[in-house]
Image (cartoon, rainbow, N blue to C red; front, side):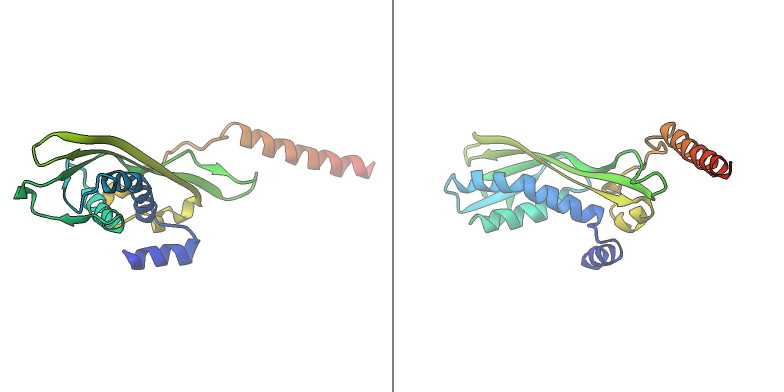
Amino acid sequence: MITAFLLGFVLTGSMTNLDMLETAVLNALEPVAEQVSSQGLETIALNIQGEHEGGWLIEQIATHTLGAAGVTVYTSRDAGGWILNLRPMELGVTYAQTRRSWIFGGKQVPRLASCEIAATLVDPEGDVILTVREGSVIENTISSSDIIIMESSTEEWANGELSDEESGNILEPLVVTGVVTALVYLFYSSRN
């Protein structure tokens, strides 16, 4: 994963889709970790709910984020202690419509990495102590030719779908035709 990040960053100067998702998950989980830490807990069991393929990413970053907030995460959920349930409501990358930076410029694709997590803190008696929903969106724009480098070869859920439409499809040919017409007119009018 680190190699893919370095390769993508060196070749394009941008983060890969998975790197963007990691940042979005981290941004969404930091407020959750602060609220759990403010309860004065020292240890907690982590439970990732739902069937999202990116649950491993949420578990890995939640363990790190909670640890940084002073809360130790353990894996045994049968101990009867405090449990933090995390459910990914949204986790993925989407591409917006392709556009050109200038009339003759290369195609650019806006990317959005979004994460929304529902968190529920349950005490040893089974009472819900805290319920929060946090989210984060990271966005940037890359060249359409760099998309293949930015996508994950092993984590298909982290790859977005590229739209076949290009914004400005009607306006762009009109502008190009107008520029060419103006140049032809100026060329022939200067000869007279």
